[in-house]
Length: 612
Image (cartoon, rainbow, N blue to C red):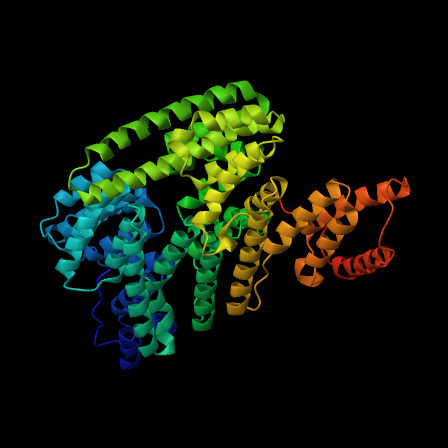
């Protein structure tokens, strides 16, 4: 909305508040003045503007509806009213209002708003037609064209439009910089994306330091800082750097809290996603709460469905698809929808689900073959090659997801040979994918005698994260350690354990409050192995040592290993099947259990919904 000229009949102190962006104070004063004023037009007009700038669109609608009825000849009030309805998501009402405007001087603004309405309804061709009718080719029209191209997944073309927009506005523009960063992100060029994010953050911080406290909230939202840091967290999360993503969002939250700015819906959504492995129930609850508001990010519905499927809550997933068909068609692509339906089908009819999985797998492989041909043909267009490579990566991720779910059917039937065969059939397409290598490693690990083959897949993952093993799945590290031990490669096992310990110490040095369980968990698994071989004294001693400090390491997941080994030990001890060599061992064990009782009484016995 354009800045409204402040009438000279408005008190100077209110004019000062508006010019300084202190809309909250201005609104309080204007609301009092509304009751007594003899110039309601000026008060209502400025109130509408202030409410709009504060994001209070319903209140702004009240002002502009009054003005539209009281002053029908000034049709700009209708335009602002339509814009407010658009902002609240009431697109049909907004469309009816702008259709009733016949002021030729407002044609460009009307077409821009109509384009925005069509864009929000995913009608991109109609939005493009409205933009063609805009006479003045300004930055706004160019940016809107870029947004349409972005939604059509034409990221390279969208990028050029946003870069053109930078030229038209004559320099730095936070929203355009964010759009460019987002294009690079979608094209798989995280390096360039991060560079633009850094510029946004730097510029925003510089500006915020210069502002008075009463303007901070408005400027934070206008600066693009929140969007930029959320995008940074998304890049870190997708690269497997979950701890860094959590830290980015934590820093953002601390900044918002310090400035007195409420947390926005995008940050809440991303927090739920990055923390899902810590507490999936809490993440699902947060996403549900967001979905029931009118400010949920578009990804909320899709991610909630995927979480339900990931943790096997198929009834919930099915209910969501059936109860919100419009959201399903708007936010979930056809192949994803078919995949989700196959997941739901799997529980009742696994054979039919396998057929559906195979259809999706074959479709993805055809698409990959076509992309590979494009990449082979190459040419000198680096941007197109980058986009094709990124599209290839995205399809491979989806392909691995479908293959893994098909393989899980035989995995749960404990047919690990069949599980291996399912993965091996598609290995030429997925060999460089981390999840594929992890699952293939698991399938081989479960077959006695194939530990050496399994270690190759696990080692590939570890090698790619050699600078920070805290980013590697605990089960990969644990199983790789066991593979080395079981194939008598003890030097490799020791080197791996030393590296895990070193990386944890480095993180602890930089963040003393961090709770790291990789080294502990790997030792628990190794201790369990020794217990399974009958060497309870060594195995339990290793487990006990690695659960201290117990107030940091004891939890439902770590206790799972201790409990299994303790029960097996007690059973064999009562049957006189083992003889303790170290008479002090029982005393050590009793002391440990007393510490568990002391620290464990406040720990819930309900495990998280995470399934390994």
